[in-house]
Length: 402
Ligand code: NI
Image (cartoon, rainbow, N blue to C red; front, side, top):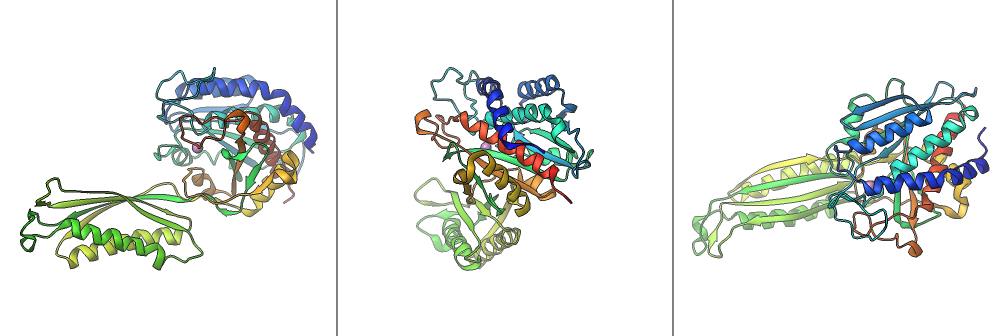
């Protein structure tokens, strides 16, 4: 069995190398589906470590590799997956650090540089301890989490959960709102599903002084905006959570001309699949009904984004045990669901999974800026907790009976 004290010592030993990797990645950020240099760096590192069955170019830039334990045990035939995302954001970095982005206008402002470096650290720790566990760890580095365009989904579609068949998945995200030394874990729905709607209201334009000869799409649109607000307050179970926000309303130019059309656009955030389906249907019905009752019509484009990340309680319990061993009971926090979206959900839909948060907020290191802010940074000490917790959770999963 893996001894937890040792794993922490091992991680402390490799941390300088992980920090160097993270800084290299931070200096050389790449946007979604353009992570060619990052993927090459990852593959070279895995190869140098002796990781087996390295595959590259999965869904453009995705990389996977296997670490096979050599011990005997109940997890001998099991495979557990650990995932990191590799992409950066179109943000001009405002940090004056020696590892500042060299790619102007592109920045690791969400910590995916740390995720990639940490998973390389996990690979190193596990390679050094292959004789302490039975079973296989599949390391997965995915493209394009940020843009909503299918980094994880494409890898799942290219069957990364097969060959060998993966039994469970684990992923983590650094969190600047959590202090370094804390790990937050929760059961059930963790992130919201994020969908978008665009409603085009078709009326009949004309002179603003003669509204009776027109069908005013602005008034119809205003009724639709108001009615949409009743969906969450009147039709969603108060114990469930959802948001419907109309964020764009575009119509007309002149102050004395009733336009032909109005456009409404917004976002829908939900946790349960049932509520997600219901809001999709009801937005269509309400908008159509209101427009028709007022003499107009609508065309609606509804785009489904990432589904909700739902943690399996048994997998979360494994991460809790691992986190306790790394940061102690006082460092383990009960996670809170957030309305943001995360495409780890595509793995969690397929296999029992847990996605957890690792604290990297530290006022002394100015690392409490929010994610996606041009001053975002990571307290690199927190990466040690992430690596140790992930490596421990993976070996715990493989070490479980049954
Ligand atoms: Ni992120």
